[in-house]
Image (cartoon, rainbow, N blue to C red; front, top):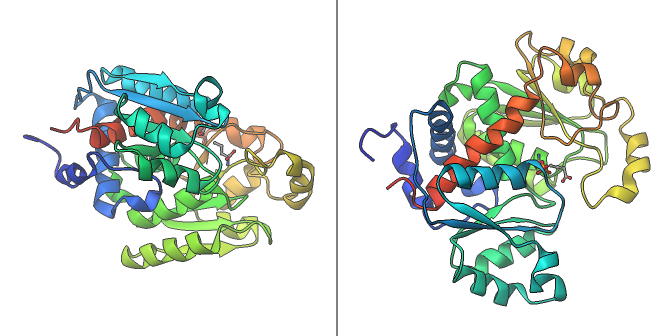
Length: 323
Ligand code: CP
Ligand code: NVA
């Protein structure tokens, strides 16, 4: 790694490993991945993954994750293979233990989007190749890497300078919130989660992220009032009220989340430099106003683009592209 950015050596142990949770990465590895993403985006660094194949197993819908993984592999010289359960024997009940061992003989890594974190862990247990969480009900670690890359860009471009900033997540305490809490805590970012009573993040993830925050001089806090969450924050973030798999709860959730829209009033409460983020897809007029989404503070489409750069960095590390 001659000429590598300091810290990049922390990525070497990731080769051949899995990313199932944001907490699978250390603080140094998270920072180094963001720095590598910055370098790849600016063209300061090239990675060659020629001949490598990433299999995509997506049990849920996806635009950004599927396309950004495919394009990331193409740009690095590799390929992706669509292994959608409907077109493989997985959809007809072939066990994960068999599928994972067979696929490990053909492809170099798997990106998996599914419901249960346990199913993802099962794939990782049986596979002898890297397994990446492309979203489960519990976490969305690839999203969080792109999110903090976007925040770093808005505040000077150096991921090391994220420490001390505050990100306010306003909405459902879901998979996206969980990964934001864990990755934020690793980076020294204060994460304030604002949600209605009954829609808090998991107690375990809250405790885990608070323990990590304690080691990195920052805080992860829970509040039950949107303005209190937004006050003075450097980023305002929201996500849908009903995630994939919760479609039948949509109407009840719309009632429960009334008053929790990320709108111009919340933006006015935040730091004057604050940026607005949303992982997408968004429901304008529900969790975010059209004005906040399209306004001058919004970095939502940069954030979507950054999925590509952050995942190129991750793939480079997991597939041995760093030498
Ligand atoms: N943000 C995100 O993961 O989008 P997709 O569901 O389109 O992949
Ligand atoms: N929380 C949302 C995120 C979509 C990218 C879901 O799980 O549907």
